[in-house]
Length: 438
Image (tube, rainbow, N blue to C red; front, side, top):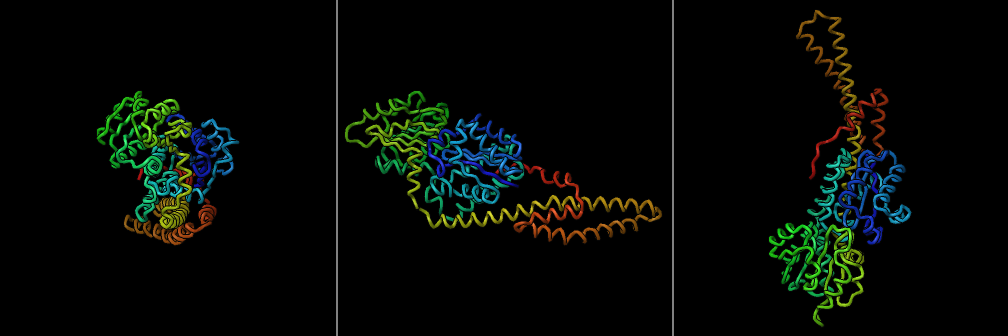
């Protein structure tokens, strides 16, 4: 496996650029298929969240893979390659494994330790499986990343530093607009992030919870669960004027809450009241950035949250522990991968030995047809036992040595010494595992 990761996130790029590279639905699927079809790529997966887009690929050539993935991201996002290149990060082989394990643990999240990334990684793997772009290598990588993420959350308190982007965003809102409890809240959208926001607001004892979504049925279902009220999506501007706090996270391609509607809503607020608080968690953004300049409005968006997260150093001790966990897991994963890489060679060697034994026993039958069944069976068992004993120690030792750095040379030595058919080894290597998600 030669894993290549090409991506950009809130750590490497401004939110405005992340917004332009955000891909969902058909555009995301098209990029994934284009990745899988690229010549250097054997397997592909795509992770796209509100603060990152990352392309994962098992490639046979680093430079060709990097050129293809970078070019495809530029082509499908519509952002010029020259502009993208300034903000892209690239990880290869062990560094790529270290990166995805760190992502799974929340170390690379805008809010360190947030747990939603595990679901997003699971969705990325599920999509790659559905699109038939993930094989053994990426399945094993993502499955292990999910296990590492779960281990980090179960063995440390890293998730206490920031359970989600929602809670972190609401904390920023409360700092400027006062306590959440008692406010009239409007949630725009009914997806996973909006649902989490609505549930959080309900726990915070808001005075009123209104939910608006393009699919009215989803809004009604979520409102019923949380004791809120569902609102037709075309009534959002009206509800905006009656709300104290608005959380928006839809999949819309354009602005949902525009400058004019926000200015009109702010103007209707009684003098001396807290500002109209807007929390925009969407990518691309739902709320016009011009809202930052409107009197009586306090907008918290992903750009605001990114700046706040950079200043936060909470959970430093847990972060250090999780980093050690990631280091251990990367080393163990590498050793397991190196050991597994020699398995097809060992299997091919044993298959060849079995063929040789079978051929020699057939020849013996032809030369000594007078042998009785009992003697023939004893001879067959003896020959097989001798071959098994001769192969046992070198193959076991080869597997042990293969787990060490540079261990791939032992598989090559076995192939050369025993003149193994490369096609036989390759057919065993490319066998696909069953589709499973932890």
